Length: 123
Image 1 (spheres, rainbow, N blue to C red):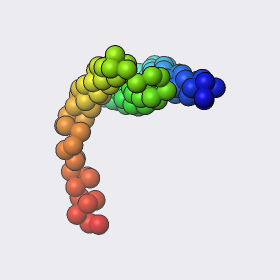
Image 2 (image 1 turned 30 degrees about the vertical axis):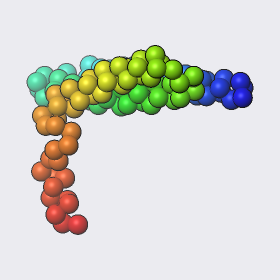
Image 3 (image 1 turned 180 degrees about the horizontal axis):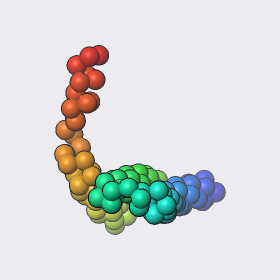
């Protein structure tokens, strides 16, 4: 049983590392792309696109980090302290994700945009 916990903790660390890699690689890639390809175009449009792409990379990374926190908490002894720590971490990351979603798309996550509504009406 102890080996199983060790492997679960390892999986949690791998998922956590993946979340950090997604944020770092996404940031690096989109900033480089901005510097090399979008500076020749309108700066306002290219900066808005960079901002949206960076935000999406951060959102994806945060979702993966929340999954890692859940796996890490499940693998440990279920104490009230660990559950409360998980709740606080998930609440903070969920709030950050929510705020980024509103900032990037100009709407709440549960509000479908016009294109999504048109697709639903045709199906």
